[in-house]
Image (cartoon, rainbow, N blue to C red; front, top):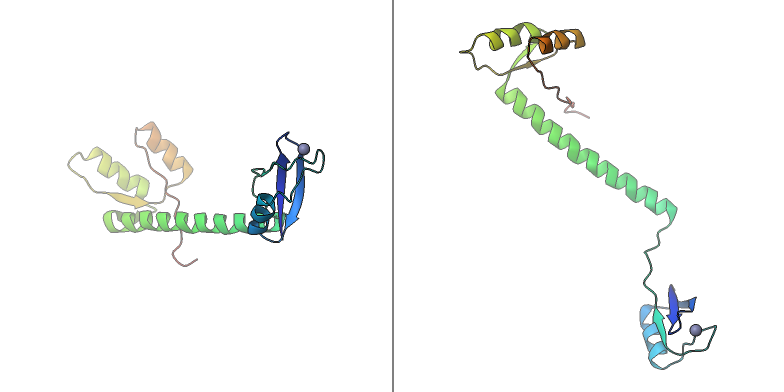
Length: 140
Ligand SMILES: [Zn+2]
């Protein structure tokens, strides 16, 4: 069964149930449908926004969100892979190493590691900006 919102030529709106969309067309062609207010036989389907139940909306939203997160994780994993392949991991020595690289103009070494907020602030004062990357684990 399908419920349609219908309206007549005078814009009277009403609802009616049909077994399928073809039944509506058939009845309408034979002028068997009429406005419940004015009995006009010029009936049209109203365009209506699709209706979904709340539960299915939630589920769809969750699926969508899960998919977005999955994509996001793939992106972040790619970034992680790129960094791992192209940068040298200096771990907790980052702030020390990054200064070496920064002040040695010949050095073009790309490094990554971890720095505390304090270290980051100190580096920022020296004009060294670090980019923080959301580091996703590969296994979850
Ligand atoms: Zn009417």
